[in-house]
Length: 504
Image (cartoon, rainbow, N blue to C red):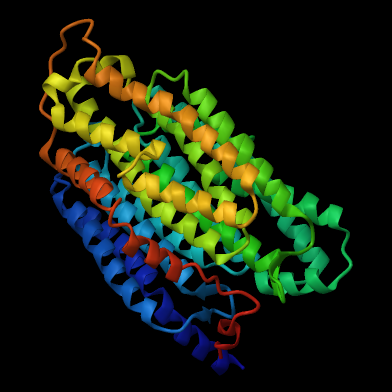
């Protein structure tokens, strides 16, 4: 028996090589910090980037192997989880690069910073692959705890510390409520794997009202991670208080991790395949998701209209986009999943670009206040053009990639029969046009109230902004490879998949 377990552990280890390499790099950073007498951060940055590149290289070959379950169905290795691994690693590489030129981090120990970032990445990778309630919770906490610390990483300022405290309080409460729902789910089904839970719920006579109640409790934790209304209150304060690179990373990678959990949870544990296609089981939770989508996108866009700080504006924009993306779940088919995945790729490009442009401009004008962007067209035309590209893409204006992301998502929702939901989403997109275009108008049309000293933007930050702006523009008309990749990654390994029988 022990020999069988050992063989399976060895067999499973080859599917977590990226996470093993990241763990070794964390140990290497700690040792390097202990033995190095140099105060320069170059060596630490090189080690962190090298670890991410190795993780990327070791992840790609897994796309060409059959889907597998590992560690006795605790994690699943399918194209769905590998898609998110690539997304997380890419976002983290951008985070490391933009952090090099972030002056808010100059006086802090970057070793600790990189260790927390890499630890968070390991947690996100595991969360996207988790098929076990305990594993889900452990991975979620592995994502959350570094996030809390990174939010308040600038120790000599009050705002980041206050934001970090709020984040911890909200996070602890929401994860506790979600864990409470997990205990009831286990008590009802006597199963801990998602596919096992689905089998019991489908064949049992558990009252639908009670299942729906447990889903609502579970959505407190997932909704917190996704900034769904009414679990969104932490978002604007944390986004404003954290350093902008961390804010951008939370808005993209952390949110993508939440969507990975949401999709796997509902497709594996609360739905099954029947003769007419995939159906929801246990309770009519699809209507609940539609309600979340409507109130989230509406509140996010309406409140964003009055924001004067670019980071708070993008925070409410993030809330609105979470409302758009969650619509794909109501379709309950692979078309909806692929639409969400493609939207996440697009969102990484345009949202990272918007935050990184604000970081670059902060280097120049020392402010995140939108009113201080007046007249920037004359001094920083390239940065203004890049910001305009990202704002228009977030609205969904062609030819930028954001237009194609929204078009594909809305089409999937309409094809599934949710026409009224797509109409509300279109109306919300029209509302969002005002505050996105307002930022462009301030930069291009308005004259500055006073003369401010303009400082050169660091070349690396400028380069990242330009690269993302070009990708945003070019990847719009050339969206097919990205969408095809999303379609190929949309099949989730679950109780109806053969991957469940491929472990020793």
